[in-house]
Image 1 (cartoon, rainbow, N blue to C red):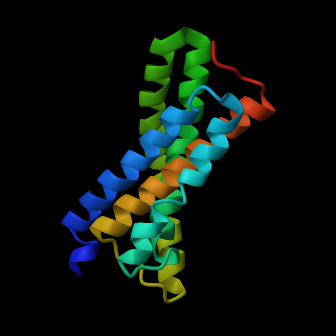
Image 2: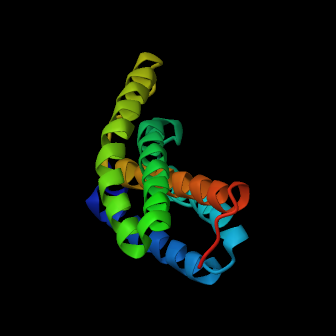
Length: 158
């Protein structure tokens, strides 16, 4: 495993990508119609360090799928909790929803790993591929959920 795929490379990428994501979200947070698509597009940002580390995006597919399913469904649980009981409902919905969606997403991740191995794609996890793959999927899942919540269902900020 090269240093680019090790813990130091993963942590460096995490700090850089997180800084960009936080800045972009802070800039767009109150533009309800744009936040979902912006978060969705930010999900492509972790692909840069994955490629720079010499990995293919396909090789991180199981991690991306896990993040998208886990965070997308957890965001729905948080939104439902917020509608039912405000901030506390969002926290409880997010926490309980996360424990349930981790299990569900793990099922999808395991199946995707089997599929990749069966098709000769090296999907061995490294700190870089696992962290950036899950971050990518999480942002994509959150972006899809937010886009659907605020454009299709008409939810709005209070």
